[in-house]
Length: 244
Image (tube, rainbow, N blue to C red; front, top):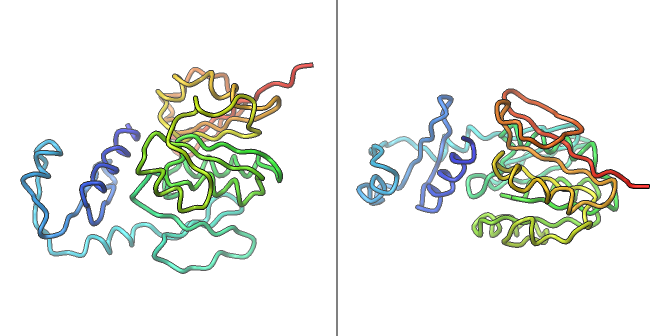
């Protein structure tokens, strides 16, 4: 599951990894400095092999993450690069590795595309499970007047706070009812299902919830007004009706 992989990557960074690569096979390869305690790392991560390797894996990991055009209006750039945004695109600097949300994953791109469609100037947007804060930044670039993000992972919030957007440690349960025009959540299908009632609770009448982190076989039991896909990944849109 992608959610398990994200947690593993976060744990590896916390233990001092100097570079992480996600292999095409779905496996993760992490690299540590020469003075790292290999025996302790092997014990922490289930006895996986810990080997010496003289290559510059940090540079290789950075090379794999390139500037990316996402949707019609965004340009995501790793923090160590100074590439300017093409004309007509918003430039967002991404802090890879420390929290989920580099723009490289399909679910992030799907959410950004849907934010482009639904966010308008003056709106209030809540980003649940904000990770690195990319989706909150996208909403702000699109003209949202109020943007706030939350995450249960304290280390993710420390990363996300660097965006200058208000962030707090906690879940959607701490968000006021009927406050958001748009809610976006790129989290696991299990959490999406468990929190099904929260999405419409947070929304104003006529509001929109953009929900992703879903693989094709794990489409959650939430009535969707729109489903967007890329590869095996899905994002859904849930609308809160305007009552007469």
